[in-house]
Length: 400
Image 1 (cartoon, one colour):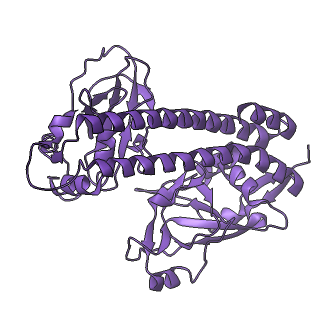
Image 2: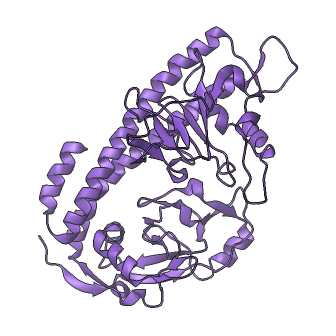
Image 3: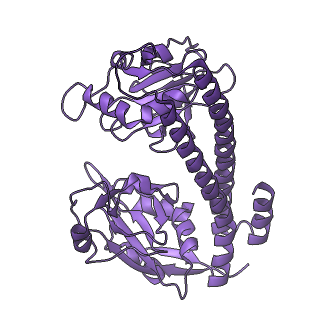
């Protein structure tokens, strides 16, 4: 194992921050990197808006993010970071900064794990400035922060071990994206969410699913609990949850779809399919969830797919009510939404395909949780020298 030495953040590279303003956001063009795009060490571009070419020129006068730059949030979501991928045209958003590594001495991927490691996270917590509304990292003094780093060869070895786990997670996520796109395509072919003159196939959402079905939960027991942050924005299934006393809120079970009904979560498409509970187990969620459960003979994936369809979301957003900035969709407004009911043969065919794909999704999500757990266990051990790279590599080989 190589010897570690003390250095400063300034030695690692150069820090740049983005403009302290927000451009006009667009649906296409260069990415405007948001702090919400930083998720568990990865950059989720589905959470970023876009800017015009003119605004891109303005917002990159100070710096243009390039592959290998360490992106991080310096306000609110402190401790979050990710590497800038190759082939992406983007500018820094508000509250975003980057560290451009000195590649002659430091491996970018190692610096990401260093940033996410417990020692650096503790330093962020200790040295952040806590204001009345937000906390922030003082970028002016950040270059002086002390860090301990090994030589470049050891950095690369550590990055390779931890990176093997992240690469497998990324590969699984690509498969999950492909499956989700296939399901959406097949759903669109069913023609459920289509307009037209009323006929014998006309119906409503209430004909296909139950809205907020009643569940009985023993309040003396602890139950899986979902907050709004646990609902995915783009992914299909729920992959993170906690536990608490099952009092109040939405109640759900496997096979249910949870729809966020409050601004801006509804507008951002926060919808989650539930399949992580034990058999017969009931979960508890935010009071801002609407539970959608398919009726007998209706494919389990259908409520999620309908919730993500553009026409349904347009309808849902139009039916939100309440004060500005705090509007909600009422569950009773979902049931009357008009749909076209597929034939029994169409339902059966789609059920066979979607049920099979849901099993594949479940397997990949479970594997990703295991891989992420292993990575999170190894990261502090490697960064503290409590375990050698060789030993860590053997552990990774067993789970990868």
